[in-house]
Length: 175
Image 1 (tube, rainbow, N blue to C red):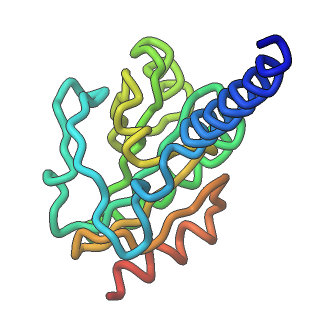
Image 2: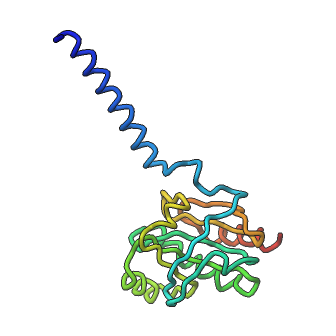
Image 3: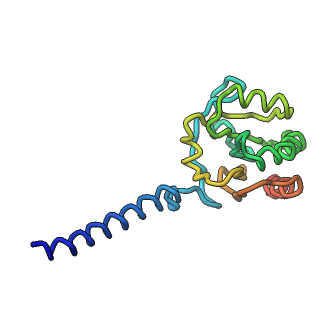
């Protein structure tokens, strides 16, 4: 019986390693198949805004939406805020909405950040990170450009500069 135990232990150990690797890989990737993609419909959400109102994606139906996932601790997120604010000011009269979805921070932290930076586009709280998971956000910032037709035109991971933002929005407005 002693000689047969060794191969059985090795097989069990290999199964544990394979299953563990699969579980970790699935958790890290967030299930790639479920992530929203260019040309698809973005997941619905219902989030409390810094303005005290509940916001849903349906509230902005028929408008161009720039949906930006960010956090105050994210250096690139902080660096792109002035560009998002400038584009909000430039395009909001043409029906463009910039929504900033803060990922899991408390209201006081976000409020202080918004006051310091002068951001006045709608800021929403994803307190439990449900929306962040639904959108498959891994690197931050990540920005979704959603056309008037309600479909994702493009997804940008990483910091956006003023010119790139302007080009993306112009393409959507001109459709």
